[in-house]
Image 1 (tube, rainbow, N blue to C red):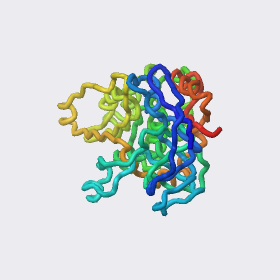
Image 2 (image 1 turned 90 degrees about the vertical axis):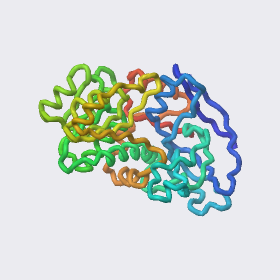
Image 3 (image 1 turned 60 degrees about the vertical axis):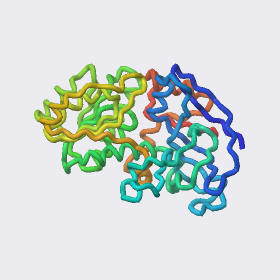
Image 4 (image 1 turned 30 degrees about the vertical axis):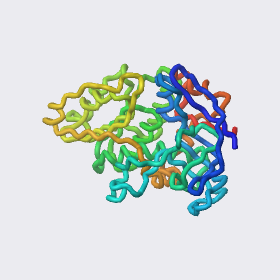
Length: 344
């Protein structure tokens, strides 16, 4: 079976390749990709990645087409989420109740989610119902935000600042409210282009109590005007240097969870360890490998507790991938979340 798929690197060098998808072995499943979301990682690749082109896309909702002879968990016609990294289930960490530390994961074997078909191991699939494919493909990014929010241990009625209004940050802010936060603020670049304006407007519609435009407003000044001693929790979805702002607004004994990456050389920052120790601040990096919290994330979407229709503003095909990616990078369109439809 032939499958078109996308790879990318710096300067919006997006390449279409023809991949050969063979018949499934006894443990594999062939799926037809109906929707694949654009992740911040994909944007980082096409904006900053200088090495060999990377496969694009891992936020996947698909349909089972063919199954290997030993596969009984799914059948042709089932609607599934594809996990990009799945725990092995048999290593010491998995068997000790700590699957988040698994290092023997099953993955997508170099295949791009932004492609027409994939061959994946059966245990990398989560069946779903009650959602269309576009909404369902938000399961993976929502699970990323959910993991960060759960790791933050938000106190009931507590105060939370989310740094970064991209899709993951917006979902983290929504989840913080669902988790019991009494106050939620979000920060972002000034609403001077269509992308940032759309994202900050959604933050307001989703109930953020304060929206701070970095550069036009002081994050520390705005937060300290309401919480002189700082907030209980900070969730950082923006690049690593945003941690500097997190330390300025976190309360004594507070928790900072962070998952914002950078592949263009800004991944190294300096931290005042004395300050962390004396103020008893906890730093918790969260990394969504292996896949975790997918069933809960899918249920939140299915039940409308996180509104996929509000988040997904654009869909696209192979032919206009570069234009959409470019617009996400330069902010020239009001894109909050873009989803590829590989079959049109």
